[in-house]
Amino acid sequence: MIHLIWTFILGIIVGLVARWILPGADHMGLFMTGLVGVAGSFAGHFLAKAIGLEADGKPNGRFFSALISVGGAVLLLLILRFFHH
Image 1 (cartoon, rainbow, N blue to C red):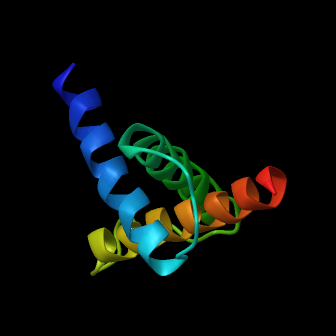
Image 2 (image 1 turned 45 degrees about the horizontal axis):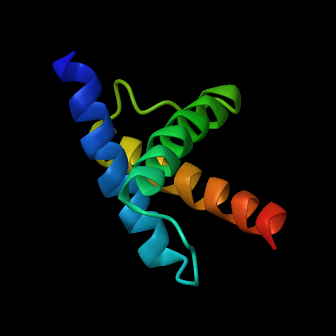
């Protein structure tokens, strides 16, 4: 259970960074920001693994993993904006 709480907390951070990178009038609260961060992180890691980029085993694996997470969240935020407007 604590793992899910930490996942959501990190998702909020990733979502906030993605919204900072891609500013705009997104009418979503902290809960939706967390969901965008978590879902974007999963999507980013899935896409990275699909094209052969993996953070595991690399010297800066955690930093690379964070970049992939934020990139996935930014991509998801762009997709949400496209369908919302």
